[in-house]
Image (cartoon, rainbow, N blue to C red; front, side):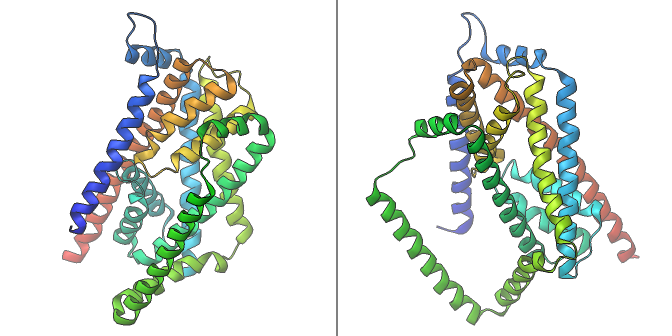
Length: 334
């Protein structure tokens, strides 16, 4: 099986899983007799306070701006000084691609930055990996705080997910992971000994990966990282305030739902669709006794509003990048 066919089948599988999860979520939406499900969701949208939803968009763009600043800062120790504007445009294009191809945005934003700034893709990708590791650390910290705040409710919620498995199956999984790591290491060593181009790519990737240790202002970098996640939380808080059904949940509930939503969005599905629509309504119903129909409608609107914002910003960034690249090529032809 060639690589293109394999990639296409994997993508189709992800789309099928996403569609199935969305269908299951909508299936659980029970409305009054004679009422349409889409009409119920639309009525929920009409009742929402649009002022809070607009505030969410402003906060979201502020978080993306800070992420672009942080990425620019992370690239500087590698000897690649990029403009903040091009960093932001590439980042937003990455978010747009992620909505269609899970994790594809990480590569596309690096490629777009290369076209704008001639920054080596392998170097910028190394810095993106650093970003993802830092985001993972922030997410773990957030989940830890959530457990401290709402320990009983979250423990009960996780117990219902039935993630437990026998010791034998867990041991088999670890054996498989260890075996895969050994095979991967052997293959990597072989390729490095026989491929100069791959050596160059790995050196560039390593340079990007180690950039975090050569930052001029590490404390400012940490401040940006914390601020980004604080703004993410504020986004969730504004959306919760926008709906009458969720307005009274309180800050601790928003923190818990934000943690659940972040875990759901980490699933390798286009834009977190499906996993988000399954886990978050379940949390709202089980932890805070929200009506199931209201919880599902709330999540569909929340996720949809975020998606529309990213699509709009991504398309504008894509067009702007295209025009800048075309403009740069004109002097070269002359």
